[in-house]
Length: 90
Image (cartoon, rainbow, N blue to C red; front, top):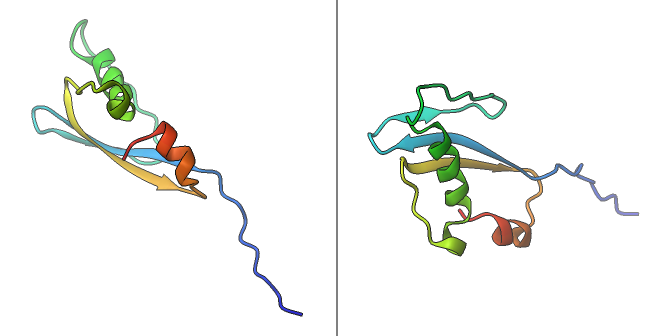
Protein backbone atom coordinates (compact mmCIF):
# COMPACT_ATOMS: atom_id res chain seq x y z
CA UNK A 1 0.00 0.00 0.00
CA UNK A 2 1.29 3.46 -0.92
CA UNK A 3 0.98 6.11 1.74
CA UNK A 4 0.05 9.57 0.55
CA UNK A 5 1.09 12.47 2.72
CA UNK A 6 -1.86 14.73 3.38
CA UNK A 7 -1.04 18.39 3.70
CA UNK A 8 -3.45 20.31 5.95
CA UNK A 9 -5.56 22.91 4.18
CA UNK A 10 -4.68 26.53 4.85
CA UNK A 11 -7.29 29.11 3.94
CA UNK A 12 -6.18 31.77 1.46
CA UNK A 13 -4.93 34.99 3.03
CA UNK A 14 -3.83 38.31 1.63
CA UNK A 15 -1.70 40.72 3.62
CA UNK A 16 -0.69 44.23 2.65
CA UNK A 17 3.00 44.41 3.60
CA UNK A 18 3.73 47.95 2.38
CA UNK A 19 2.12 51.08 1.00
CA UNK A 20 4.15 53.64 -0.94
CA UNK A 21 2.72 57.15 -1.06
CA UNK A 22 3.11 59.84 -3.75
CA UNK A 23 5.82 61.63 -1.76
CA UNK A 24 8.00 58.48 -1.74
CA UNK A 25 7.26 57.50 1.86
CA UNK A 26 6.85 53.75 2.33
CA UNK A 27 4.83 52.38 5.23
CA UNK A 28 5.89 48.80 6.09
CA UNK A 29 3.27 46.58 7.70
CA UNK A 30 3.42 43.26 9.56
CA UNK A 31 0.90 40.57 8.60
CA UNK A 32 -0.87 40.62 11.98
CA UNK A 33 -0.67 44.36 12.61
CA UNK A 34 -3.55 46.74 13.10
CA UNK A 35 -3.14 50.10 11.39
CA UNK A 36 -4.90 53.28 12.50
CA UNK A 37 -4.73 56.40 10.36
CA UNK A 38 -5.07 59.62 12.35
CA UNK A 39 -4.85 63.22 11.31
CA UNK A 40 -6.67 66.45 10.64
CA UNK A 41 -9.76 66.74 8.47
CA UNK A 42 -9.10 66.45 4.74
CA UNK A 43 -5.53 65.15 5.11
CA UNK A 44 -6.11 61.91 3.13
CA UNK A 45 -7.08 59.23 5.67
CA UNK A 46 -10.19 58.13 3.79
CA UNK A 47 -8.45 58.56 0.44
CA UNK A 48 -5.84 55.94 1.42
CA UNK A 49 -8.64 53.43 2.00
CA UNK A 50 -10.30 54.40 -1.29
CA UNK A 51 -6.96 53.98 -3.07
CA UNK A 52 -6.51 50.51 -1.60
CA UNK A 53 -9.97 49.59 -2.88
CA UNK A 54 -9.17 51.07 -6.30
CA UNK A 55 -5.95 49.05 -6.39
CA UNK A 56 -7.94 45.80 -6.03
CA UNK A 57 -10.45 46.69 -8.72
CA UNK A 58 -8.20 48.75 -11.02
CA UNK A 59 -8.65 46.51 -14.07
CA UNK A 60 -12.41 46.46 -13.68
CA UNK A 61 -13.01 50.19 -13.12
CA UNK A 62 -9.80 51.67 -14.57
CA UNK A 63 -9.36 54.04 -11.61
CA UNK A 64 -5.88 55.23 -10.63
CA UNK A 65 -4.97 55.77 -6.97
CA UNK A 66 -4.64 59.42 -5.87
CA UNK A 67 -2.35 59.44 -2.80
CA UNK A 68 -0.31 56.24 -3.19
CA UNK A 69 1.84 54.74 -5.91
CA UNK A 70 2.17 51.09 -4.89
CA UNK A 71 0.97 48.39 -2.51
CA UNK A 72 3.11 45.40 -1.56
CA UNK A 73 1.07 42.24 -1.07
CA UNK A 74 1.77 38.78 0.37
CA UNK A 75 -0.40 35.83 -0.60
CA UNK A 76 -0.51 32.75 1.63
CA UNK A 77 -2.40 29.50 1.94
CA UNK A 78 -4.05 27.32 -0.65
CA UNK A 79 -4.71 29.85 -3.34
CA UNK A 80 -7.13 28.93 -6.08
CA UNK A 81 -6.12 30.98 -9.12
CA UNK A 82 -9.70 31.35 -10.31
CA UNK A 83 -10.75 32.77 -6.93
CA UNK A 84 -8.05 35.45 -6.98
CA UNK A 85 -8.28 36.23 -10.67
CA UNK A 86 -11.97 37.10 -10.32
CA UNK A 87 -11.54 39.19 -7.16
CA UNK A 88 -7.98 40.50 -6.87
CA UNK A 89 -5.36 41.71 -9.33
CA UNK A 90 -1.65 41.38 -8.72
